[in-house]
Image (cartoon, rainbow, N blue to C red; front, side, top):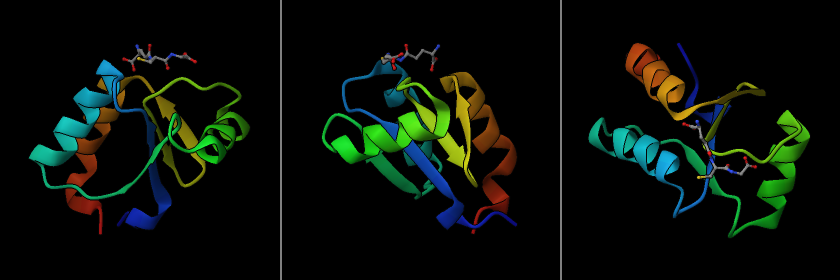
Length: 84
Ligand SMILES: N[C@@H](CCC(=O)N[C@@H](CS)C(=O)NCC(=O)O)C(=O)O
């Protein structure tokens, strides 16, 4: 099982790749912590500290960053039933 507390999606509102991921989460009713790096400067710094860059979307899974919207969507497709 995957604890949703171990998942964070870093994103920003107008990023089309982030929209793609957030739409997928919405359609599958997956609720995880989301941090907008343009609204929250500390989230932007966190993302920098974790992965050394500010590319979004970034899904952090138990401290490990995953970039690329297609990979993130695929990860949720594979793992959605394990998230609790
Ligand atoms: N191929 C990537 C593209 C992601 C991307 O280009 N994100 C832009 C925002 S729309 C970004 O983070 N640019 C700033 C940066 O790379 O630091 C994906 O599909 O996730």
